Length: 441
Ligand SMILES: Cc1ncc(COP(=O)(O)O)c(C=O)c1O
Image (tube, rainbow, N blue to C red; front, side):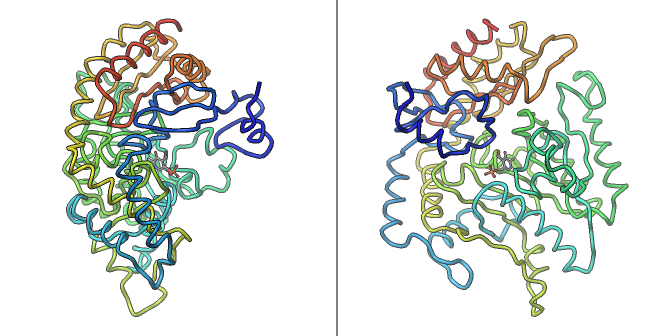
């Protein structure tokens, strides 16, 4: 029997990415604590996807709850044009301390897609304000940058963007270092990151026309959890300098420790010109995003001429509640040695998940930080797979739910990315469940 909340949901609510006609019914959740979510019908689910990659310190964290409550009793919101407030200023200061060197200015918005929209508009207008019209962006195959129009345009063409194809502005595109499916068809043993040549060729062709290169540093998330060699990322920076284009690092997913470093750019010791942050910025509590940039970009907008203004903003820009919780989340990083914890999880993941490769349908296992990825194939030799619409993902979700585990594969790409507070015993448990599920496929 359907519960009251479910009946009302089905009558009035439209869920994201969901074909209501064929989807399984949504599961009513009544409470969250640590790595667990509690269902209305009394089950406990281990959150293996950190509630859409946002939660890092666990659900309903006492310190974050407290920070939210304290801020709510002082100031819940105020317009951010012409006004400012302590949480926004302190968060900007703290982020600048933590972000790669050279990033000095913080522009707030409220979700990952808007962080990217802001970055694209900022890069485009940066050149305009300097007297150049640069119409092209260079983006990656398999990229995912969000669902608003600019974010879709820079994302790879997929089932997500198909309906809007004619409305999306053109981006030049290159193949990323997806080593399991090498764009040049090379064996890994002979790889010298030759695919960089594809990027350099494209930059050469579009020199003077290209405003920015946009990348998801180290891990391309929704496009298949593709993990890059750090050398590739380092060379992207080098080539952007060589061809005088801005580098936008979309760290909406990778930011705040997920890859084992505070920001994924640190793996290659690079600083982008513009960086996009959201998701785990507030520890998974509230919508908030940041597009941070360098003094050089900021200065191109700093002028007596009002037409050079960056005319962009949102009602909830720099919401004080979100900023206060984000500050507390960063304090937890410091007080509780969170990055060390992620390092330990990476070791445990390697120990537990690597052997999945022996299963017949597992093509590759990839691990970085607190992220384990299993790419499933129909046949190991041909690496054939059906991609995002592969039914195998829905089957795995259903099987995992029966075992008290929340997983949401991207089609044939199964991934596990829990809040960092997960214990090693819980990791062991999850690995066993995943092994059993994959064995029974
Ligand atoms: C790299 C990246 N950029 C942008 C976004 C969009 O973020 P949001 O869903 O908050 O709009 C996502 C979401 O998954 C993402 O992974």
